[in-house]
Image 1: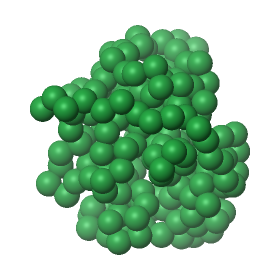
Image 2: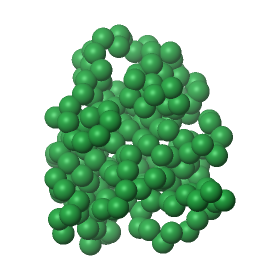
Image 3: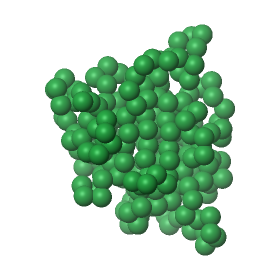
Image 4: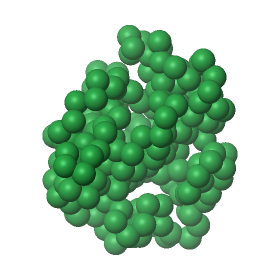
Length: 207
């Protein structure tokens, strides 16, 4: 099961996107920053998050041997193309997703919109209240493997999310090689948290 493009935890597949051109340069293994992406890759991104979709990184992001794209909708008041793997803590997004290529099909394996979800449900620790903006940081080479960090950010008319200190806790997400999916981590960063089907359950609160 994969996540719906709009709401809920249902399925979607992007079929017939064609083969992805691969580069043989030494930089091929390093996630690249938009807009330096092939048209085929951008078309996949737009099929998931619309015309404003920006490919932040692509390649073997989870180190699982499969092509993945990290796609975002950037907060309107931040410049497109700014930020990236080197300084991604400055990126404020309204939505983000990771899609993975399986054969000639693409499947969504992580979604960040008002909540954080994977194909199995809501990630442990995701806030019960809807989130309108997230501070996103992506690191491709932590000692424990690639990591995405999501911090809820409040937006107001006078202050974009990046300038508001909400005191919200950051949710770290990594690819779990045992379960073969993205999952959130507990505060110690030593244990993966199980998904929940509803945010009203106590298990959804990060301890």
